[in-house]
Image (cartoon, rainbow, N blue to C red; front, side, top):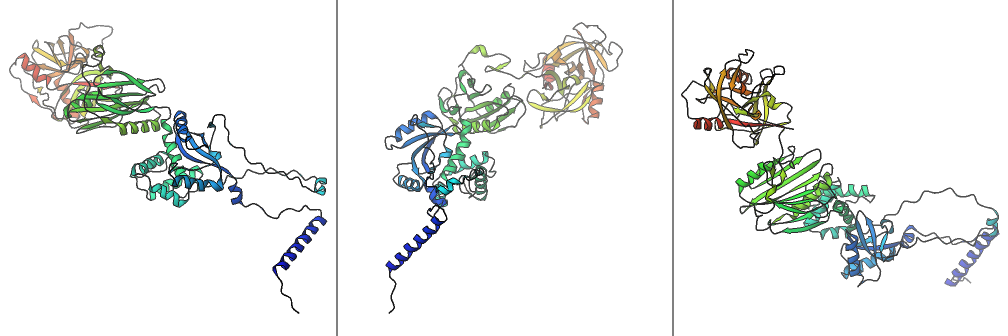
Amino acid sequence: MSRQIGWGDFETMEKTMRQLICAIFIWFGVAFAPLTTATPAQAQAQETVWLQIEAQPSLTQAQDRIRDYAQDFTNIAGFDLGSGWYGIVLGPYDASEARTVLRQLRRDRRIPSDSFVQFPNRLRSQFWPVGAALPPAPVEDAQTDVPQTAQAQPEPEPEPEEPAAPVYVPDETRAEALRSEQQMSVEQKKDLQRALAWAGKYEAAIDGVYGRGTRGAMAAWQTRKGYPDTGILTSAQRAEALADWNAVFEGLGFAVLREPDAGLEMDLPLSIVTFDRYTPPFVRFEPTGAIEQARVLMISQAGGRDALAGLYDILQTLEVVPLEGPRSLRGDRFEIEGRSADFVSYTFAQTRNDEIKGYMLLWPNGDEDRRARVLERMQAGFTPIPGTLDPSAGDPSEQAVDLLSGLELRKPKRSRSGFFVDGAGTVVTHAETVAQCTRLTIDGLHDAEVLNLDLDAGIAVLRPKDTLAPDSFARFAVEPAQLGSEIAVAGYPYGGVLRAPTLTFGRLADLRGLQGEEELDRLDLTSAEGDVGGPVVGRDGAVLGMLIPPPVIGAQAFPPEVQFTLDSASLQTALDKAGVTTQTQPSGTRILAEDLTLRTRAFTVLVQCWD
């Protein structure tokens, strides 16, 4: 009779097989052990993790927030994250339960929506609770049931193995990362693009739109940081990128400062600059010593576009505004960037409702990344409010000819005179004026370049870099002046301290130089060094020549009233070589001294040489 096999029979068979296998293992002296191995996922599930719910840029702020959370959570802790940031975490949890707890707390809105799973290897020293430490790493159980036969034969020591690379466990799935990304505002997305750009991974527009360029930058950032390059940053990765980006502000002490007397509110780095004094139109903030060359000036004064243009010009005469660097004046606002070997200054000002408001930041050269971020934050926090700085505020003793509101004016290397010779603004001056200059200016406002230089004759012809149309220009005399006739020299004897040229009257003493030079005329008048290069005119207003420095003849020293001029024929020859067309004036009638002064001042200019 056939018999059906039941479940009990299978159990009997399985028991018999296990007994048989056990007997075989014992026969050969091999210890019996379970034939199973923990999978990577099971091992990972035993790892201790935390839930990071917040990060603060200072220890004090982090401790204050932990005290708030401690009212709801008993397992709150705090760790140093590095780069000046301090993390607030919950836990520890097993990795297997952490995600479930994270979702539950997010759903109940007990923790921020961007909280994430944090791992112990990313946490530094623990600061809360006081005296606490990271939980010890799990220790594998020692094997004590080794058979005697195995103990009798010592095994060779195993070769050291390289430590296994840590297994990356994402704090969010791809879908969760996308959902949390969609909750970001446009400005938050722009900030993340700025952080990626600062990290050198993003070069496209800061528009808050995450296209191919942004995704590529995210993937490149992930690769550099050792994360899988998914092109979608998780909440934790976004926090890390922003923390790196904001690390430049560590120790700067940014805070919003309201200055009602100046009608301004700004975000300023108050740990490195502090209020010093009013010197209208400036509110001055001097360095505290943390960054020696860091300075801030608020700008506040009444005025429209004309006053703004005047401020634009005069600021560029200050030592704190170096000559090198881009600058622009457009309608109701201007920007000036000046760079020197030691520092960089940036100035912005605008006019609204007849009030000029702005600021200047000075920062040491060579710290460009931090300077750019500081400037960006100041720009974002710049808020004009009604009112302007009282012009009488401050200490009147700080006002001087060589100071502007207590700030030192830039001094030229050399100040001499010159004069317009055509309607295009071409200027002739003495060659000594332009020697070894990095920059030349006409009347302190217009940059110029050397069109022609005749060192033998001592003549320099300058051309303005920008279009310049003078109100008047010189006409050269057709015939030489009569010996003993009255003449005048126009120039800037005080190097530009006086805004208008000065006329000095005298007589034509000789039609030759002391050694018979035909191109020179000797004058009987007293002039100053700043007059060199200025026009010598007759009483009819025609130009007879250009004042030159006294010649050096051995150790002789000439009386101050002995001066020399290079005649008009020599000047016209040099101008012809430079391609400049000049105009002449036949001998005319004598004009009044007042009229001669007005006419000559109109074409006489201040020429300055700058380092």
